[in-house]
Image (cartoon, rainbow, N blue to C red; front, side, top):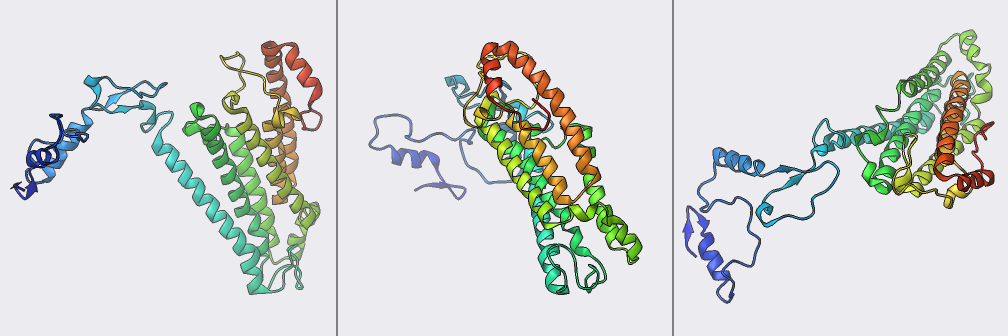
Length: 350
């Protein structure tokens, strides 16, 4: 086989493979922009080839994927501009958010396990309720066991935000974008609520570490009733229940699900009354409400528990009222009959 500059000659190779073919063209797909002769490689040649490839990219519509090409455009790649950085469906933003959530989940789980079990192995005198034979302080002179709630909350938050995106991407693909994680577009109130929850938990755990029994004991009322195994278990049950119900509701509703209340009926918008919607009218709200309350029970927060309950009750009460008004306009008697047979599941919201 003849060679040129140490590379096989493409002409001789193709002529050999097509000896018994009646077609004048080879029975393979031609690579884009391959030079007619190989020649030696150099950074300059590599740069020129990459520039030539980039020049063939055609930016397509942001609302449709190009699945068919005309013969004249067969060598042109189609690219949705929304996938570019700083755009709505930015792949770089999605990957970065997913990576950060994965790191947060891993750190949260590992630290929680270390503080719950690794510390117990080293001190050997604390029980699962955070109490010990020397006044709940452990041999290391501090009640570090109380800090497990902080990384646990981090892991729970990471799971919630990841599932918000994954469920949307899996069951409501047309609406999935970088904001579907709800990390930066859930409002300042949501961000402030999480900061306050972390702050109260850290404050209580920090006070429990102060050597003075008077100061450490001051956090006992009413936190003593919240920092018990029964309350923590109830909190975890509500967190899991709320997350499962919300994710199931989003999956079942599919493309009918919106994070923003719709005041106009879109094409294809239909009333879903099956599955979990046969029992709960607003299961995604039900799920988030009890998930949030459950997180504060797990954290053992007294102030934030009351605040979360009150703020979310008021928020969902107004939101459900607005949404049901729109749904009655959309579906009329059909929704009125459906409403009469189902519940909301949030206290004092009907």
